[in-house]
Length: 457
Ligand SMILES: Cc1ncc(COP(=O)(O)O)c(C=O)c1O
Image (cartoon, rainbow, N blue to C red; front, side, top):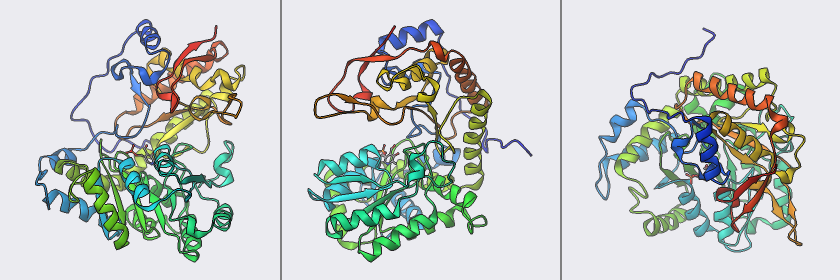
């Protein structure tokens, strides 16, 4: 059949409140034109993030009832541990309340000021945890990953020459571990090939530097490998995931992505000395090692969710949704980052609004227009989020002005996405009338979350 259907039917529904255009205009004004400050119920389709926003299956809800809330050694922990070990093959497994807690434990136990941690691209909490202990986080993404027009299939790959140069420049002694983020969140979940993972590991082995995966979207990455890398077409997603982890010495994971749960994370490693440090930090910050930062029922749901994320039908449907959406954008003619990644589509706001200067924040213009037009919540990834200030205090724009539409897992149907496309079409038609914005209030750090905007008339 040509139509790839959702491999589930809906048993519980959650009403969407569809407020009028006038109400949306008021809501946005009250939120100071910053969609982060909107109430969730004022959003018709919420594409702010794919993190923790997925829907659980009947099997996961049933597993929740089996939650064993014993403080130590619960049956829920044993199931969780067995599942994570089955996929990752790792010796030591530590449950955390979410991904950044795993990153915090890793960084605080292994790093010292002056250390350098390479990655294809650090996620912002990973970078913050590394920098918090005085180490440096460096991004060594392959050049195709930075090129919006490149159709390369594995745009999340690490640049091996830059990695070699980084090791030569800083010395292996200053690099306690190297990270690889699969898929690479920056750019909407661009995948990393198995060949690249293997080559990174081989290079690191020469210098005795351990490899730690940021494995939030390991199952989506496995699907891309199966789809596009020669030699993997006949392999199961579980097999490919096992291969992926076989090159790693440890991993951090936010279960809010490919764990298909609303909260949770884990940290794993093979080294006994690392594990000793992780265990002590876990007990101090999160909880006893057999529950860490989670309730027994959360461990149950995650154990089921991790395997559901590796289900072939599920990944095919998820990818088909993203591809379907991209085809819709092609029909409209709205520019976006190609090829689409695993969990999001990025509109190119700079190309959509060429009449605006970068410091008139074209991404905010598109984000706010999508909200007013159809109640869609998206997020700017441009000069507001990634801009900087030079030594004279002058604002320096980001090289890219993007708007991310992230896809929650198993939440929206094809007609929801048809609706989003209709709204984009409307915004695209009115693009010449979309105005720029100025910032009227901003905090010192992470300004995009709480700053206020005003439209420039
Ligand atoms: C690549 C990546 N790493 C780490 C994290 C942090 O995970 P959490 O939000 O569970 O702390 C995220 C969250 O979006 C992510 O996308």
